[in-house]
Image 1 (spheres, helix red, strand yellow):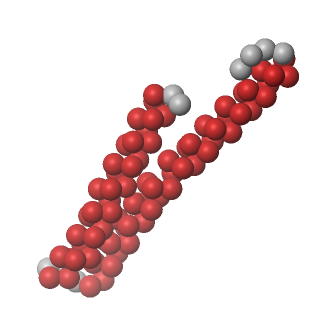
Image 2 (cartoon, rainbow, N blue to C red):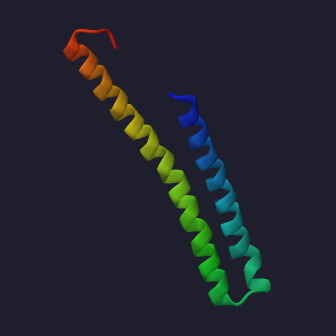
Length: 82
Protein backbone atom coordinates (compact mmCIF):
# COMPACT_ATOMS: atom_id res chain seq x y z
CA UNK A 1 0.00 0.00 0.00
CA UNK A 2 1.17 3.50 -0.77
CA UNK A 3 2.84 5.32 2.14
CA UNK A 4 0.69 8.42 1.65
CA UNK A 5 -2.44 6.29 1.93
CA UNK A 6 -1.12 4.62 5.08
CA UNK A 7 -0.46 8.03 6.64
CA UNK A 8 -3.93 9.25 5.68
CA UNK A 9 -5.54 6.14 7.18
CA UNK A 10 -3.53 6.57 10.36
CA UNK A 11 -4.57 10.22 10.59
CA UNK A 12 -8.24 9.25 10.31
CA UNK A 13 -7.83 6.59 12.99
CA UNK A 14 -6.12 9.02 15.37
CA UNK A 15 -8.86 11.58 14.74
CA UNK A 16 -11.48 8.90 15.41
CA UNK A 17 -9.96 8.05 18.78
CA UNK A 18 -9.77 11.73 19.74
CA UNK A 19 -13.38 12.36 18.69
CA UNK A 20 -14.52 9.27 20.55
CA UNK A 21 -12.71 10.38 23.71
CA UNK A 22 -14.17 13.89 23.46
CA UNK A 23 -17.66 12.54 22.86
CA UNK A 24 -17.44 10.27 25.89
CA UNK A 25 -16.01 13.09 27.99
CA UNK A 26 -18.92 15.34 27.06
CA UNK A 27 -21.39 12.57 27.91
CA UNK A 28 -19.78 11.84 31.28
CA UNK A 29 -18.67 15.26 32.50
CA UNK A 30 -20.84 17.58 30.44
CA UNK A 31 -24.12 17.36 32.38
CA UNK A 32 -22.41 18.90 35.41
CA UNK A 33 -21.78 22.25 33.75
CA UNK A 34 -23.69 22.33 30.45
CA UNK A 35 -27.39 22.29 29.62
CA UNK A 36 -28.74 18.88 28.59
CA UNK A 37 -29.51 20.04 25.05
CA UNK A 38 -25.92 21.27 24.58
CA UNK A 39 -24.51 18.00 25.92
CA UNK A 40 -26.65 16.04 23.49
CA UNK A 41 -25.59 18.04 20.43
CA UNK A 42 -21.90 18.11 21.36
CA UNK A 43 -21.84 14.39 22.04
CA UNK A 44 -23.70 13.70 18.79
CA UNK A 45 -21.21 15.88 16.91
CA UNK A 46 -18.10 14.17 18.33
CA UNK A 47 -19.48 10.63 18.14
CA UNK A 48 -20.75 11.23 14.61
CA UNK A 49 -17.33 12.34 13.44
CA UNK A 50 -15.74 9.41 15.27
CA UNK A 51 -18.00 7.04 13.35
CA UNK A 52 -17.09 8.68 10.03
CA UNK A 53 -13.38 8.63 10.95
CA UNK A 54 -13.55 4.89 11.71
CA UNK A 55 -15.58 4.13 8.56
CA UNK A 56 -13.65 6.18 5.99
CA UNK A 57 -10.32 4.25 6.21
CA UNK A 58 -12.22 1.09 5.31
CA UNK A 59 -13.54 2.83 2.21
CA UNK A 60 -10.03 4.02 1.32
CA UNK A 61 -8.61 0.49 1.69
CA UNK A 62 -11.44 -0.99 -0.38
CA UNK A 63 -10.98 1.55 -3.18
CA UNK A 64 -7.22 0.99 -3.14
CA UNK A 65 -7.70 -2.78 -3.42
CA UNK A 66 -10.19 -2.39 -6.24
CA UNK A 67 -7.86 -0.02 -8.08
CA UNK A 68 -4.92 -2.42 -7.72
CA UNK A 69 -7.03 -5.38 -8.89
CA UNK A 70 -8.18 -3.41 -11.93
CA UNK A 71 -4.61 -2.39 -12.69
CA UNK A 72 -3.41 -6.00 -12.41
CA UNK A 73 -6.21 -7.15 -14.71
CA UNK A 74 -5.24 -4.53 -17.29
CA UNK A 75 -1.61 -5.66 -17.09
CA UNK A 76 -2.65 -9.29 -17.61
CA UNK A 77 -4.81 -8.28 -20.58
CA UNK A 78 -1.79 -6.61 -22.16
CA UNK A 79 0.35 -9.66 -21.48
CA UNK A 80 2.60 -7.93 -18.98
CA UNK A 81 3.48 -8.94 -15.47
CA UNK A 82 1.58 -7.00 -12.77
